Structure formats: structure tokens, C-alpha cells
Amino acid sequence: MNWSNELAYYVTPKSGPMRPMETLLDANRALLDDLSPAIRRRPHWVAVKRLLLAAATSAEPVDIRLATDGLVRALEAEGWMTRSKMAECG
Image (cartoon, rainbow, N blue to C red; front, side, top):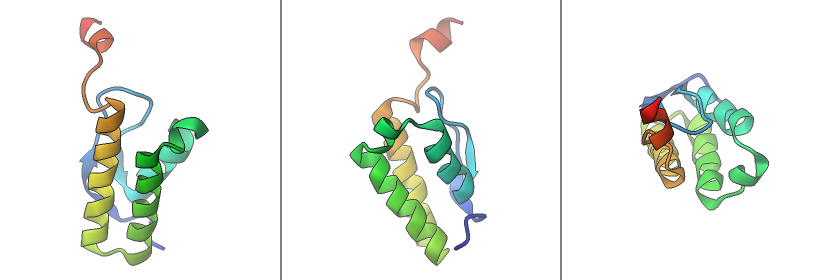
């Protein structure tokens, strides 16, 4: 497996607990270290885990793109790709 491959594009959540991510390893660590077990069990995060594993296994650009896009969709589902109102005021 090749976890050092870069994501299709850099992903930087605007809010929420997750760190900026550049590689498959960054995304995997963010999933495991930044999210609680309860959040990781949500269907969109389970799908991201599978996509990341497929991308690290194949290292094919299409699989990396699917994993990156899935990651962004999951972040959007959580509302973390937009700035929180509290962050905008501070």
C-alpha cells in the first residue's frame, strides 16, 4: 500500500476538528485521530475509509480522485467546508 500518494487536490476544512490534508496518509490520520468513534461510524465516513483504502492499495489516479472527492463530500455533509459563524465573528 502506498499511503504517501498526494490527494487529487489539497483539502483544508474551514471549520470542524479535521486538519488540512495533502496525502492519503494525512487523510487517514485525520480520520483516525481527529474524529471521534461515533462520527467515524457515520455512513459518509465509512465510505471515505473504504475509498482511502482502495486508493492506497491501487495508487491509481482515478481511485485517488474518488477518495479525495468522497472526503470533501463527507466534510460538506458535516458542514466543515464552510466557516462557522463563530469563526467569522472572531
